[in-house]
Image (cartoon, rainbow, N blue to C red; front, side, top):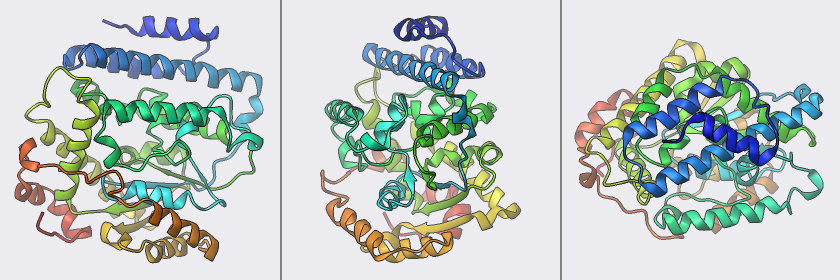
Length: 382
Protein backbone atom coordinates (compact mmCIF):
# COMPACT_ATOMS: atom_id res chain seq x y z
CA UNK A 1 0.00 0.00 0.00
CA UNK A 2 1.29 3.46 -0.94
CA UNK A 3 1.15 5.90 1.96
CA UNK A 4 0.97 9.68 2.02
CA UNK A 5 4.38 9.85 3.70
CA UNK A 6 5.94 7.80 0.89
CA UNK A 7 4.67 9.95 -1.98
CA UNK A 8 5.50 13.18 -0.14
CA UNK A 9 9.04 11.95 0.48
CA UNK A 10 9.43 11.02 -3.20
CA UNK A 11 8.19 14.42 -4.37
CA UNK A 12 10.57 16.22 -2.02
CA UNK A 13 13.44 14.02 -3.16
CA UNK A 14 12.72 14.77 -6.83
CA UNK A 15 12.65 18.53 -6.34
CA UNK A 16 14.92 19.21 -3.37
CA UNK A 17 12.07 21.34 -2.02
CA UNK A 18 10.19 20.86 1.24
CA UNK A 19 7.37 23.41 1.54
CA UNK A 20 4.00 22.07 0.34
CA UNK A 21 2.03 25.07 1.53
CA UNK A 22 -1.30 24.88 3.32
CA UNK A 23 -1.37 21.50 5.08
CA UNK A 24 -5.11 20.97 4.50
CA UNK A 25 -4.25 19.11 1.30
CA UNK A 26 -3.08 16.18 3.44
CA UNK A 27 -6.61 15.04 4.33
CA UNK A 28 -7.53 14.65 0.68
CA UNK A 29 -4.27 12.86 -0.13
CA UNK A 30 -4.89 10.30 2.60
CA UNK A 31 -8.53 9.85 1.58
CA UNK A 32 -7.53 9.28 -2.06
CA UNK A 33 -4.82 6.71 -1.32
CA UNK A 34 -6.72 4.90 1.41
CA UNK A 35 -9.85 4.87 -0.74
CA UNK A 36 -8.02 3.32 -3.68
CA UNK A 37 -6.64 0.60 -1.42
CA UNK A 38 -10.04 -0.11 0.11
CA UNK A 39 -11.80 -0.14 -3.27
CA UNK A 40 -9.67 -2.99 -4.55
CA UNK A 41 -10.60 -2.13 -8.14
CA UNK A 42 -7.23 -0.84 -9.36
CA UNK A 43 -4.97 -3.34 -11.13
CA UNK A 44 -1.19 -3.09 -11.00
CA UNK A 45 -1.04 -0.55 -13.82
CA UNK A 46 -3.89 1.46 -12.29
CA UNK A 47 -2.15 1.63 -8.92
CA UNK A 48 1.08 2.72 -10.61
CA UNK A 49 -0.69 5.40 -12.67
CA UNK A 50 -2.44 6.76 -9.57
CA UNK A 51 0.81 6.83 -7.61
CA UNK A 52 2.64 8.60 -10.43
CA UNK A 53 -0.15 11.16 -10.74
CA UNK A 54 -0.13 11.82 -7.00
CA UNK A 55 3.64 12.33 -6.92
CA UNK A 56 3.39 14.67 -9.91
CA UNK A 57 0.76 16.75 -8.14
CA UNK A 58 2.94 17.02 -5.05
CA UNK A 59 5.90 18.04 -7.19
CA UNK A 60 3.78 20.80 -8.72
CA UNK A 61 2.70 22.02 -5.26
CA UNK A 62 6.32 22.18 -4.14
CA UNK A 63 7.24 24.19 -7.22
CA UNK A 64 4.25 26.54 -6.91
CA UNK A 65 5.15 27.27 -3.30
CA UNK A 66 8.79 27.88 -4.26
CA UNK A 67 7.72 30.47 -6.85
CA UNK A 68 5.61 32.24 -4.24
CA UNK A 69 8.51 32.13 -1.77
CA UNK A 70 10.84 33.79 -4.25
CA UNK A 71 8.21 36.16 -5.68
CA UNK A 72 5.64 37.03 -2.99
CA UNK A 73 4.31 39.79 -5.24
CA UNK A 74 2.49 37.10 -7.23
CA UNK A 75 -0.16 37.09 -4.53
CA UNK A 76 -1.04 40.69 -5.43
CA UNK A 77 -2.63 39.51 -8.68
CA UNK A 78 -6.42 39.80 -8.87
CA UNK A 79 -8.72 37.34 -10.63
CA UNK A 80 -11.70 39.51 -11.53
CA UNK A 81 -15.18 38.27 -12.51
CA UNK A 82 -14.23 34.86 -13.92
CA UNK A 83 -16.78 33.01 -16.04
CA UNK A 84 -17.23 29.36 -15.07
CA UNK A 85 -18.84 26.82 -17.37
CA UNK A 86 -21.23 24.59 -15.44
CA UNK A 87 -23.83 22.00 -16.30
CA UNK A 88 -23.86 18.26 -16.63
CA UNK A 89 -20.97 16.67 -18.50
CA UNK A 90 -21.58 15.64 -22.12
CA UNK A 91 -23.80 18.71 -22.68
CA UNK A 92 -21.54 20.60 -25.08
CA UNK A 93 -19.58 22.39 -22.36
CA UNK A 94 -16.21 21.35 -23.78
CA UNK A 95 -17.07 22.64 -27.26
CA UNK A 96 -18.30 25.85 -25.63
CA UNK A 97 -14.98 26.24 -23.81
CA UNK A 98 -13.09 25.84 -27.09
CA UNK A 99 -15.29 28.49 -28.72
CA UNK A 100 -14.67 30.90 -25.85
CA UNK A 101 -10.93 30.22 -26.14
CA UNK A 102 -10.96 31.68 -29.66
CA UNK A 103 -11.33 35.18 -28.18
CA UNK A 104 -7.86 36.68 -27.57
CA UNK A 105 -9.37 39.27 -25.24
CA UNK A 106 -10.02 36.57 -22.62
CA UNK A 107 -7.84 33.89 -21.00
CA UNK A 108 -8.60 30.19 -20.91
CA UNK A 109 -6.84 27.55 -18.83
CA UNK A 110 -4.90 25.63 -21.47
CA UNK A 111 -4.12 21.94 -21.17
CA UNK A 112 -0.35 22.34 -21.16
CA UNK A 113 -0.26 25.02 -18.47
CA UNK A 114 -2.84 23.28 -16.26
CA UNK A 115 -0.72 20.15 -16.26
CA UNK A 116 2.56 21.97 -15.64
CA UNK A 117 1.99 25.51 -14.31
CA UNK A 118 5.62 25.99 -13.25
CA UNK A 119 7.61 27.86 -14.28
CA UNK A 120 4.81 30.37 -14.88
CA UNK A 121 4.26 31.00 -18.60
CA UNK A 122 6.17 33.78 -20.30
CA UNK A 123 4.38 35.91 -22.95
CA UNK A 124 7.43 35.71 -25.20
CA UNK A 125 7.31 31.91 -25.41
CA UNK A 126 3.64 31.23 -24.68
CA UNK A 127 2.98 29.73 -28.11
CA UNK A 128 6.26 27.78 -28.32
CA UNK A 129 6.74 26.60 -24.73
CA UNK A 130 8.31 23.09 -24.69
CA UNK A 131 5.54 21.93 -22.35
CA UNK A 132 3.17 22.07 -25.33
CA UNK A 133 5.08 19.29 -27.10
CA UNK A 134 5.39 17.33 -23.85
CA UNK A 135 1.63 17.55 -23.34
CA UNK A 136 1.04 16.36 -26.90
CA UNK A 137 3.11 13.26 -26.13
CA UNK A 138 1.08 12.63 -22.98
CA UNK A 139 -2.17 12.96 -24.91
CA UNK A 140 -0.90 10.46 -27.48
CA UNK A 141 -0.19 7.98 -24.70
CA UNK A 142 -3.74 8.44 -23.39
CA UNK A 143 -5.08 7.82 -26.90
CA UNK A 144 -3.12 4.56 -26.97
CA UNK A 145 -4.34 3.45 -23.55
CA UNK A 146 -7.94 4.58 -24.08
CA UNK A 147 -8.48 4.70 -27.87
CA UNK A 148 -12.22 5.32 -27.49
CA UNK A 149 -11.59 8.57 -25.60
CA UNK A 150 -10.62 10.52 -28.71
CA UNK A 151 -14.12 10.19 -30.13
CA UNK A 152 -15.72 11.52 -26.95
CA UNK A 153 -14.11 14.91 -26.32
CA UNK A 154 -12.12 17.48 -28.30
CA UNK A 155 -8.62 17.78 -26.84
CA UNK A 156 -5.53 19.77 -27.73
CA UNK A 157 -2.35 20.71 -25.82
CA UNK A 158 -3.09 24.35 -26.65
CA UNK A 159 -6.83 24.04 -26.07
CA UNK A 160 -8.78 24.71 -22.87
CA UNK A 161 -9.13 22.09 -20.19
CA UNK A 162 -11.24 21.65 -17.07
CA UNK A 163 -9.95 23.39 -13.97
CA UNK A 164 -10.49 20.16 -12.04
CA UNK A 165 -6.73 19.83 -12.43
CA UNK A 166 -6.25 22.87 -10.23
CA UNK A 167 -8.60 21.50 -7.56
CA UNK A 168 -6.64 18.24 -7.74
CA UNK A 169 -3.57 20.11 -6.49
CA UNK A 170 -5.40 20.14 -3.15
CA UNK A 171 -6.55 16.51 -3.60
CA UNK A 172 -10.18 17.59 -3.63
CA UNK A 173 -11.29 16.85 -7.17
CA UNK A 174 -13.54 14.53 -9.12
CA UNK A 175 -10.73 14.33 -11.68
CA UNK A 176 -9.42 11.18 -10.01
CA UNK A 177 -12.62 9.36 -10.95
CA UNK A 178 -11.28 8.99 -14.49
CA UNK A 179 -8.76 6.47 -13.17
CA UNK A 180 -11.22 4.12 -11.51
CA UNK A 181 -14.10 3.55 -9.13
CA UNK A 182 -13.03 4.95 -5.75
CA UNK A 183 -16.26 5.20 -3.72
CA UNK A 184 -14.50 5.75 -0.40
CA UNK A 185 -12.74 8.84 -1.72
CA UNK A 186 -15.91 10.10 -3.43
CA UNK A 187 -17.81 9.73 -0.16
CA UNK A 188 -15.16 11.76 1.63
CA UNK A 189 -15.18 14.35 -1.17
CA UNK A 190 -18.95 14.77 -0.92
CA UNK A 191 -18.73 15.96 2.68
CA UNK A 192 -15.31 17.64 2.87
CA UNK A 193 -14.65 21.37 3.18
CA UNK A 194 -13.72 22.57 -0.33
CA UNK A 195 -12.41 25.96 0.81
CA UNK A 196 -8.72 25.06 0.55
CA UNK A 197 -9.21 23.60 -2.94
CA UNK A 198 -10.62 26.83 -4.35
CA UNK A 199 -8.04 28.90 -2.51
CA UNK A 200 -5.32 26.86 -4.21
CA UNK A 201 -7.20 27.08 -7.51
CA UNK A 202 -6.92 30.85 -7.25
CA UNK A 203 -3.29 30.63 -6.14
CA UNK A 204 -2.37 28.85 -9.37
CA UNK A 205 -4.42 31.21 -11.56
CA UNK A 206 -2.53 34.14 -10.01
CA UNK A 207 0.76 32.43 -10.85
CA UNK A 208 -0.31 31.78 -14.45
CA UNK A 209 -1.51 35.38 -14.84
CA UNK A 210 1.48 37.02 -13.15
CA UNK A 211 3.58 37.86 -16.24
CA UNK A 212 0.63 38.81 -18.44
CA UNK A 213 -1.77 41.74 -18.71
CA UNK A 214 -4.88 40.70 -16.79
CA UNK A 215 -7.64 39.31 -19.00
CA UNK A 216 -10.98 37.83 -17.90
CA UNK A 217 -10.71 34.11 -17.23
CA UNK A 218 -12.99 31.61 -18.97
CA UNK A 219 -13.00 28.40 -16.94
CA UNK A 220 -15.12 25.28 -16.74
CA UNK A 221 -15.75 22.06 -14.86
CA UNK A 222 -19.14 20.41 -14.30
CA UNK A 223 -18.35 19.33 -10.70
CA UNK A 224 -18.23 22.97 -9.59
CA UNK A 225 -22.00 22.55 -9.26
CA UNK A 226 -21.40 20.45 -6.15
CA UNK A 227 -19.42 23.15 -4.33
CA UNK A 228 -20.73 26.57 -5.35
CA UNK A 229 -20.52 28.13 -1.85
CA UNK A 230 -16.79 27.35 -1.62
CA UNK A 231 -16.20 28.64 -5.16
CA UNK A 232 -18.08 31.87 -4.48
CA UNK A 233 -16.24 32.45 -1.21
CA UNK A 234 -13.03 32.73 -3.27
CA UNK A 235 -14.56 34.26 -6.41
CA UNK A 236 -17.46 36.40 -5.12
CA UNK A 237 -17.93 38.09 -8.51
CA UNK A 238 -18.02 34.85 -10.53
CA UNK A 239 -20.60 34.29 -13.24
CA UNK A 240 -21.75 31.02 -14.76
CA UNK A 241 -22.78 29.71 -18.15
CA UNK A 242 -24.72 26.47 -17.78
CA UNK A 243 -25.20 24.00 -20.62
CA UNK A 244 -28.16 21.61 -20.78
CA UNK A 245 -29.10 18.36 -22.51
CA UNK A 246 -31.61 15.54 -22.18
CA UNK A 247 -30.48 13.45 -19.19
CA UNK A 248 -30.93 10.25 -21.20
CA UNK A 249 -28.14 11.47 -23.47
CA UNK A 250 -25.94 12.46 -20.54
CA UNK A 251 -25.63 9.70 -17.94
CA UNK A 252 -25.07 6.81 -20.40
CA UNK A 253 -22.43 8.90 -22.17
CA UNK A 254 -20.68 9.79 -18.90
CA UNK A 255 -20.59 6.15 -17.84
CA UNK A 256 -19.27 5.13 -21.25
CA UNK A 257 -16.53 7.76 -21.02
CA UNK A 258 -15.42 6.62 -17.55
CA UNK A 259 -15.58 3.02 -18.72
CA UNK A 260 -13.15 3.92 -21.50
CA UNK A 261 -10.71 5.94 -19.36
CA UNK A 262 -10.43 3.25 -16.68
CA UNK A 263 -10.68 0.16 -18.87
CA UNK A 264 -7.00 -0.78 -18.65
CA UNK A 265 -6.52 0.41 -15.07
CA UNK A 266 -9.04 -1.75 -13.23
CA UNK A 267 -9.30 -5.38 -12.25
CA UNK A 268 -12.63 -6.16 -13.91
CA UNK A 269 -15.81 -4.70 -15.37
CA UNK A 270 -17.55 -1.68 -13.88
CA UNK A 271 -19.60 -2.40 -10.78
CA UNK A 272 -23.27 -3.18 -11.42
CA UNK A 273 -24.30 0.00 -9.61
CA UNK A 274 -21.71 2.25 -11.25
CA UNK A 275 -24.26 4.03 -13.44
CA UNK A 276 -26.64 4.54 -10.52
CA UNK A 277 -23.78 5.97 -8.47
CA UNK A 278 -23.02 8.44 -11.25
CA UNK A 279 -26.68 9.42 -11.51
CA UNK A 280 -26.80 10.00 -7.74
CA UNK A 281 -23.78 12.29 -7.85
CA UNK A 282 -25.09 14.43 -10.69
CA UNK A 283 -28.56 14.57 -9.18
CA UNK A 284 -27.08 15.95 -5.98
CA UNK A 285 -24.94 18.48 -7.84
CA UNK A 286 -27.87 19.68 -9.92
CA UNK A 287 -30.18 20.02 -6.92
CA UNK A 288 -27.58 22.09 -5.09
CA UNK A 289 -27.13 24.38 -8.08
CA UNK A 290 -30.84 24.85 -8.70
CA UNK A 291 -31.40 25.53 -5.01
CA UNK A 292 -28.75 28.26 -5.17
CA UNK A 293 -30.34 29.73 -8.27
CA UNK A 294 -33.81 29.67 -6.72
CA UNK A 295 -32.52 31.35 -3.55
CA UNK A 296 -31.52 34.49 -5.43
CA UNK A 297 -28.47 33.46 -7.42
CA UNK A 298 -30.18 33.13 -10.80
CA UNK A 299 -28.86 36.45 -12.06
CA UNK A 300 -25.37 34.98 -12.15
CA UNK A 301 -26.41 32.33 -14.70
CA UNK A 302 -26.82 32.18 -18.46
CA UNK A 303 -28.27 28.98 -19.97
CA UNK A 304 -27.48 27.31 -23.30
CA UNK A 305 -29.33 24.22 -24.51
CA UNK A 306 -27.45 21.55 -26.43
CA UNK A 307 -29.61 22.10 -29.50
CA UNK A 308 -28.88 25.84 -29.55
CA UNK A 309 -25.29 25.15 -30.56
CA UNK A 310 -26.22 23.02 -33.58
CA UNK A 311 -25.71 23.35 -36.44
CA UNK A 312 -24.52 26.95 -36.02
CA UNK A 313 -23.15 28.03 -32.60
CA UNK A 314 -22.70 31.72 -33.39
CA UNK A 315 -26.24 32.92 -32.47
CA UNK A 316 -25.94 31.21 -29.08
CA UNK A 317 -22.49 32.75 -28.59
CA UNK A 318 -23.88 36.17 -29.51
CA UNK A 319 -26.56 35.82 -26.82
CA UNK A 320 -23.92 34.78 -24.27
CA UNK A 321 -21.70 37.74 -25.16
CA UNK A 322 -24.66 40.09 -24.92
CA UNK A 323 -25.38 38.77 -21.43
CA UNK A 324 -21.71 39.24 -20.49
CA UNK A 325 -21.81 42.80 -21.78
CA UNK A 326 -18.98 42.09 -24.25
CA UNK A 327 -19.08 42.74 -27.99
CA UNK A 328 -18.83 39.63 -30.15
CA UNK A 329 -16.72 41.13 -32.91
CA UNK A 330 -16.76 39.81 -36.47
CA UNK A 331 -13.14 38.72 -36.03
CA UNK A 332 -13.89 36.63 -32.94
CA UNK A 333 -17.06 35.19 -34.49
CA UNK A 334 -15.06 34.17 -37.56
CA UNK A 335 -12.46 32.47 -35.36
CA UNK A 336 -15.20 30.60 -33.51
CA UNK A 337 -16.84 29.52 -36.76
CA UNK A 338 -13.50 28.31 -38.13
CA UNK A 339 -12.86 26.18 -35.05
CA UNK A 340 -16.37 24.74 -35.18
CA UNK A 341 -16.05 23.74 -38.83
CA UNK A 342 -12.58 22.25 -38.30
CA UNK A 343 -13.70 20.14 -35.34
CA UNK A 344 -16.88 18.22 -36.17
CA UNK A 345 -18.14 16.05 -33.33
CA UNK A 346 -17.53 12.83 -35.29
CA UNK A 347 -14.07 13.65 -36.67
CA UNK A 348 -12.55 10.73 -34.70
CA UNK A 349 -15.53 8.44 -35.15
CA UNK A 350 -18.91 8.29 -33.48
CA UNK A 351 -19.18 7.86 -29.72
CA UNK A 352 -21.42 4.81 -29.56
CA UNK A 353 -22.73 3.29 -26.35
CA UNK A 354 -25.59 1.11 -25.22
CA UNK A 355 -27.43 2.25 -22.06
CA UNK A 356 -28.61 -1.30 -21.44
CA UNK A 357 -24.99 -2.43 -21.24
CA UNK A 358 -24.72 -0.39 -18.04
CA UNK A 359 -28.14 -1.35 -16.67
CA UNK A 360 -29.63 2.08 -17.38
CA UNK A 361 -33.41 2.39 -17.73
CA UNK A 362 -33.89 5.61 -19.72
CA UNK A 363 -37.50 6.07 -18.66
CA UNK A 364 -36.65 5.74 -14.98
CA UNK A 365 -33.68 8.05 -15.46
CA UNK A 366 -35.82 10.77 -17.01
CA UNK A 367 -38.38 10.42 -14.23
CA UNK A 368 -35.63 10.74 -11.60
CA UNK A 369 -34.36 13.95 -13.21
CA UNK A 370 -37.76 15.44 -14.04
CA UNK A 371 -37.00 18.30 -11.62
CA UNK A 372 -34.25 19.30 -14.06
CA UNK A 373 -35.52 18.12 -17.44
CA UNK A 374 -38.93 19.76 -17.13
CA UNK A 375 -37.23 23.07 -16.41
CA UNK A 376 -34.35 23.18 -18.86
CA UNK A 377 -34.39 20.46 -21.50
CA UNK A 378 -36.85 19.04 -23.97
CA UNK A 379 -37.32 15.30 -23.56
CA UNK A 380 -36.74 13.42 -26.78
CA UNK A 381 -36.79 9.69 -27.39
CA UNK A 382 -33.29 8.19 -27.19
